[in-house]
Length: 537
Image (tube, rainbow, N blue to C red; front, side, top):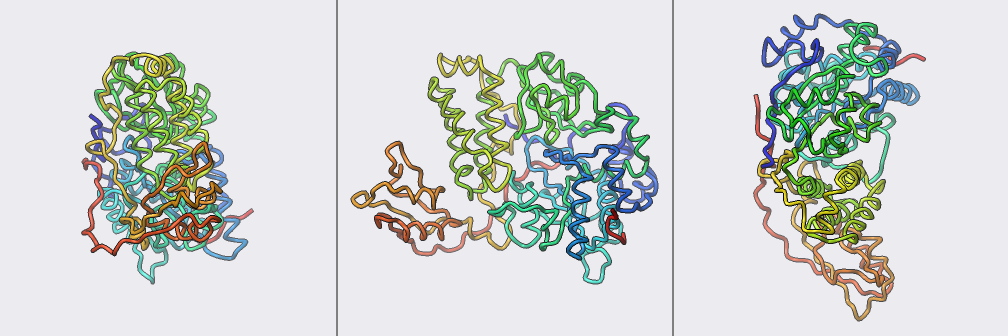
């Protein structure tokens, strides 16, 4: 159960290949084979590149779907205004257990990704290129690709290019996390939200986009917008890369033109003829039911219209003989473990939501159902990254898609079906804990402090919950719900502030003796498989 996908699963294509051209010839296209398959690529001016991206309606393929031409122009305008050179960052941090499309591209067609990134770097006059990855296989393939092009991070290089390896974590893939790690910090979001287009790596305007996005740009630059538009839908031309897993006979990454019926993709992977539900977009995505599957086509607009999501391109059907709430609970627990542990609504809210979903399965009734809805609502738009928002969307979609099962569990004796662990997680169903990496790694070690509430002094002012939400929540009576708790290492300064500011002086901290540093442990990883001018106006 919960078997991990290999880094490079089976790859299929519907119609004529574009991103996957040459995959039938070799396992990995080195530079020489890449040029034989795709041909040379001529540089484009900045505005030419922006117009190309606009004409093909290229949107980010990492989940958010932001128009690439807008991002390109925003970075260039900011660089011109400030008189600094921008930075180009390729985000290959594909850290959802159910997503492998970018990992496949980096492992098998790294030069196609570099083509798109180098087009942008030359058009904007960038002198720094960074490729963010999280797996050994992707690091090895991309470093080899840079070497094949003669690119390095040497001080005398015209373009300094390197690979940034981060831990396999859900929050690592956030743009702000990747930028922070490139600057030498931990691979977690900073406490404030900033626009990378205005201030990214080293404070410079940064063009950061998903690996597939750059590869799509390279294809369009070679064949032109007219030929590119001959494939797929008129308003969403081209192809998309999907990872299909879950209850399928053949987990795979597949390249399909937009407009292909979703049910055809599921049949290709050997999904059940009538799935109980299909999770679209990954673990920050949405469920659709069997009837809706027959209406949906592979496109961002179509999936949005039927209540689904293209998201990160993950498609996961489940069969009729498994408990959908039990399967969703396993994902909800994993999402809670993936919190960066620095924003109270996420750090406290996601585990509470998972517990609430478990209460529903155990017959908690309408109160348990309402509690999950309330928690999901409360965590939205209250984090330093999109993790709480995406997790809340998954939870709300689960409650909406499986109403009959919720009634059977919450108000009855359950659905009677087992939990088979069909949705892929990490090996053994476990997720890594802690956020190692960067100069602040020790902030995520064992706690050294414990904070105590003196009930003889506490008057329920509630300031502690505002200052230290990682530890304190207020009960219905307005008083803290815990009398003592360990303080996370990263929150020790906030705990001291809470003690000093408590109006009733009801808090105290006791600090344990420093412990010897434990030997480092490797994170569990997924199993291995095989320019010169800025934009003009």
